[in-house]
Structure formats: structure tokens, C-alpha cells
Image (tube, rainbow, N blue to C red; front, side, top):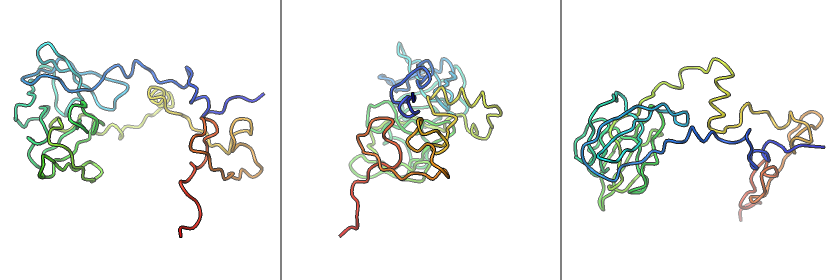
Length: 232
């Protein structure tokens, strides 16, 4: 009797293929109030590549990626028009050439872009109709609303990819935290009961085009193209 192939098992979900919920208990967002805030603590989160900082403003506390040089007890300002690392401002109030991170895609969504350790974007120029251009780390230019909030500075944790994992155990727990498939086994090296590409004399990869709505397990190989044949 065969067993579920890996993509089926991952699609169904089990203790082996499930993310560690505790690693994602910290939710990054921006506060509802403006004024002066204080860094209460720095947090190591297994679900994030950068250290996080818990910031207190009045009775409200929120989590934000820590900037390079952040210390506990440091004062920050929110919407106070002061350009200093860690301060939170609207994009329209940030001068060109400033490094920013945790950028809102839409005003009020709490920050969706540039949250990886050591990364930052740069404010390029301002346009009409309250639009601002931002240069991403990939050198791509994005035009966003000037009402989107951003954090000034560069995220801490630069150089994290320079240190090797050293042991397979460290790599295992890192991948398990994020529910990543590791170690990855080539499909053609499996048995026929374990994968549609399994077995086959000479290990020749079978060509297969899976349907777009195929369930996990059947959706292996190439995704169905939107059209085939020579364009006329």
C-alpha cells in the first residue's frame, strides 16, 4: 500500500507539516496614536529575520522591527516630522534620500514591505496628487500614497546570511519554524508510489502539465499554461 506523497501530506497538514504557532505570536503593526513613544524591550522572534522592538505610547504597545542601533529606553516620535532613526512618519513628510523600512502598501495596513533584517528602501522623489516614489532594495521603483506610514532607518540584523548554519540540526529547526520543506528530495529519485515522477529507468524526468485547480499531490510538474500553440 502506498503512502501520501509529500505535496499531499503538506496540503493536508499534520504535525510534521505545520508551522510553529509560537514563532508567529508577534504581530507587526503601527499604533493608533501620535506622540512620543519609548522602546520597552527588544525581542528575538524565531519567525522573523530581524530583532523586534516593543514600543509603548501611552496605554498602547505595538511591535515593530528594530532599527540598527536601537536600545531599550530610547525615545521615538510618531508623526512628529522629526527625521531620526526609529521615528514613524507619513511618506509625504520624509525627505528624498532617507532610508526607510516597514512601509505600508495602503494607508493604515500596519506595514507590509521591507521587514527583512538588514534591509531598507530609499525615498526617491515626490509627485503630484500626494504620490511618492520609493526605490526598493531590488532597484525597482514603487509609487505609493503619501499617507502611507514608514519607519526611518535601516533594520537591524544585517549580515545574518554571512554566518553558516554549521550543523544540520540548526538548519532543521530553522526550516521547521517556518514550515519549509527540508531536506528536499528530488522527485525522480523517489519510488513510483511516492511521487508521479518516481522510478523510471534511467531517471528520465516525465513531462507533465498539471491542471490549475488540481489538488495537492496531483499538482506537480508544470502549471497549465494559459494558452498553447503558435500565436497567430
